[in-house]
Length: 302
Image (cartoon, rainbow, N blue to C red; front, side, top):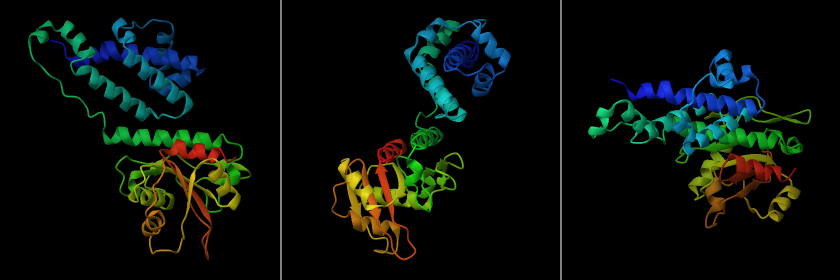
């Protein structure tokens, strides 16, 4: 008697790890860095590199496995994907392949009796909350790289700091929005990011994004930058819809944004801005489909 989990452990994982180790080495990672990324020993990496671990030909040939290896290797090498997200993505594919697919076929070959039954295997939800959260964090990381690689972004950071955020597809509260802890600040001409993206940390930018969504926007990403008339003009010239709102129009951010957007047909990416008031710094909010898209709009202004 052989369980499908044994197929995963004995056939699938060694093949997948070998493919990942090879791709990560091609990205220029050292043997130690590959070991840390995959959570395995350096000796195991050495064995993979020297072909001492047999690969299952059918698993290697599967295009879904190939695509997953490419995405994970790229994400781990560039820092866009955490080890948790990589684990979740691999786990999801394993469950999909177990459900009457490649791994189920390999299982039937190891246990011919299974072919004579109508056995079905439960799979993990591919749209799990953990997977969605990790994808949102990954998108924010990519957006941050877009911003920090832009030499002029520090000059766009307001006195209160910037934040880059993205929310869940069905976000309702700031707990559903991932942002940067402590915000992004200009430190001697460099955009400084104090920590990894986390949920529930960006109260203000998250509130503006959620309010825009309440008003009919489908956007899930946002970033705030300093306000100047020249920046608004540049954004308008770049083809973005610009909408002014009064920071003192209503008692809450949601009501203020809803008032400003009432009757407006919103584009996929647009700009909200307020020109300040007593004790309130003028700010521009770039609202876009995701965090990376919002960062790209800001980068165009450098």
